[in-house]
Length: 146
Image 1 (cartoon, rainbow, N blue to C red):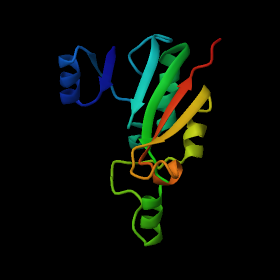
Image 2: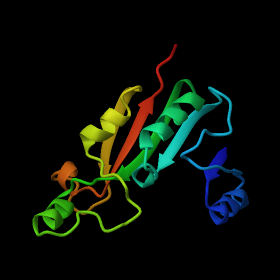
Image 3: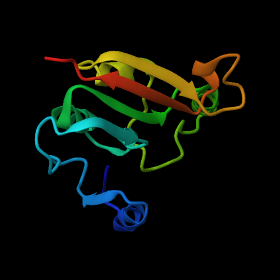
């Protein structure tokens, strides 16, 4: 198991858990050979990147055929954020979030993968209407076999 981050403190914590720490910037090519991983996790990362498609492409490069890409992004189109926009306030309060993902834009970002699954999670009212009330969207996609 390898943990990649730009935050050296986070890498120190990962190392303490037995995870091999690798410092790397997700906006640059990863220091790994093609098809070297079975799973790549992009947890709460893509919304922070200027060009998230480059990171998804790089994850696809390092995944073995049939490998899985899993991760999560904030659900930018939940009711709370829509109401904020309607009353004239920014729908996103985190200045480090550079992208707002809808289910459609997330699926588009993952278009080179098979078996794309989205799940809406985390929120008090996710049972009655997950798309409108979930805080996050989790995804699971498979790199096509050759």
